[in-house]
Image (cartoon, rainbow over the protein chains, first blue to last red):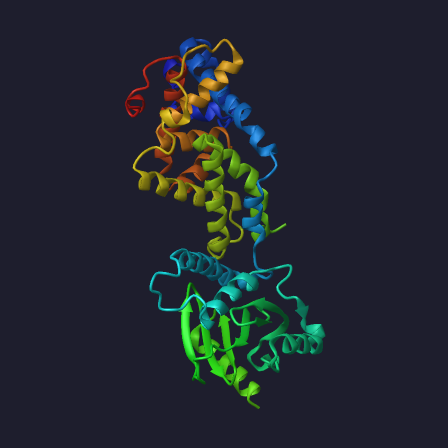
Length: 254
Length: 168
């Protein structure tokens, strides 16, 4: 074997440090290093660097995880199909947060207490909720609508949106400017959620046709009918939401 | 058996370890982890099932880290901010050696630090590091070699070359 055969590339030396050099070359290299102490010392130092990195930072792995990090990943949609909705909800939360951070004194296209804005915020908060999306579930639909009707002082109905693929999850009571508001939540088999938000209309408001607002990924169709304001919110395309809003309107005016 | 979105949580401890070594500041490190997790949750549809979820998460973290570096126009933790003095060679005492390596790491250019840590601490293959950092394998190998040599010189008290000149 000639001296010329014992040549190693820098890559091979690094592989040796990391234990990723094949066994035959490793034997050759170790024979070579026994004759080249300076090179051997250099590679030993590199190996010590790896060991020291583990000694320094491995304890981090055993630390209890901060709540905020766990919260980030546990706040996920229930089903696979909802990830697009989840993504837009994340954007929406950021959008609404930024929107609110701008303050109420700044001229905004929408009044802070406006129906679509309140509905969109309530949608973002509760449609992302995994454990407690509603206070009263659809299994107690009769109780739900009686309760909400009593609290809102008007007849609250839960329209059937099954023809659009959305089933009632349940509902909850929310605070609003003029007395309480009701939120009814619907979900399709892909886990997409829509919410119908109902509250007393502003005194100056007259009946309106459908109006549309979009904020931070949440689409809202809203209208005023009689004494009540209605808003249907969802992170779904506008035509689909309009279709459902029409179903809602027709059933409420039947 | 298949990795899913639920598996992301399993990698949090390792993402934290890497971030801590990268940034040397507990709060900044957890901020980086949180940014990474948020992006992972929102971009999960871009992860290809069957590929290594851990490598994908490290890729997201790398991208966020590099963007933050670019945005700040400087290393995330300068020597002054870390409150650490330049390395003093006293390798005989183990405890001191550990502190020295931690200090020396902060003096490495970020792209060297990443490669040294991904290989030496996180145990990624060279090919994985190339994918995570988006550079050719040859670049990974030269960064690894230079990074390790730079660390060796720093801990031996030798001049650190260009890295030291960044400390104003």
